[in-house]
Image 1 (spheres, rainbow, N blue to C red):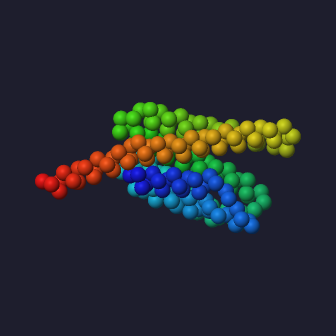
Image 2: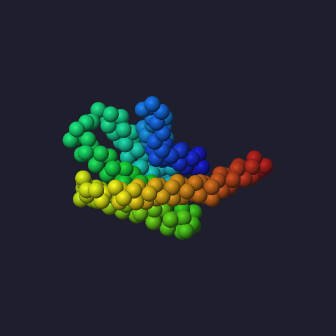
Image 3: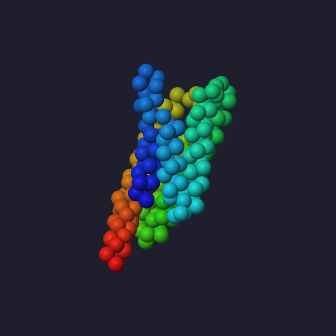
Length: 187
């Protein structure tokens, strides 16, 4: 369990961080999506939302490859489709984390997952609508900065939640399995 959450954490970090050197992305989003998909595959027994997240991550990995070939007016529509699928992926991922936390009797972490999924989707919808409404406006720059900061903070809070679930729930589960296995060996 902890390994799978670690894969999701690092995969998401790859997707969030854009570090380039001479135009070459050192942390390709496609690898991040594949890492997340692998992590979600291992968590599918906890919630079907993880299986849906896995599928969406695989689609996003393919779209990441395709985006290099999309130019011009098609790029706007393509970007919109990618954002839509990304929102669905976050919605499902955090929904799966919510269900896992509830199964472990941690309503506090479940509530955080629910709040973060609502915040992420709301911020992305507002960003999209304001981008359309204020395209070309000189007032858009300060607003874009505020929205970028809001998205960044939400993503950091999502990463923190995944880390907490891994540390507080998944590691605990691994410890219980080890104790159970030792008891089986001594019998």
